[in-house]
Amino acid sequence: MSYSETIIYDKVFSNFGDGYSVDTGEFTAPDTGVYVFHAHAYNSNQDRAMWIELIKNIDSLVSVSGYNSHSTAGNTVIVSLHKGETVAVRARPGQEFTLFGKSDQVYTTFSGYRIGEIPYSDPAAGLLGR
View: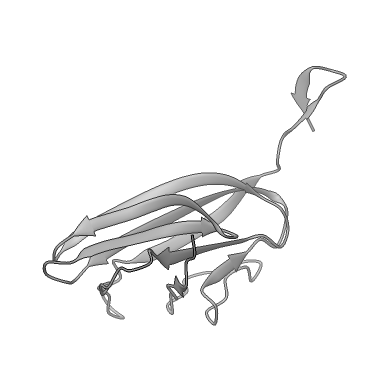
């Protein structure tokens, strides 16, 4: 499945580690770890479906969908990333809709942050550890 229309968020509140690119709309993990990502959307089209997805590299993680004007939706996912892997919000192929937002009315957002290291299993110990 191809996801060609990356949604670019042009208002950046913070970008510690410079992982998010306003040119590509992609977050590139600056470090390996466990991350949380949130996507929220506000559909401003009447009689149209909004369907966006959080994508890790090329794989869909979670979807956000709504139908008709003024529908809102959001989703959250916790995922492990290796340094250099990407996460982005993309419109589902074949969808035509407009996301609502103004400089003083921010409803459609994409955010993420690292919450820790990737735990690993030591087969010799049979326990989780670092």
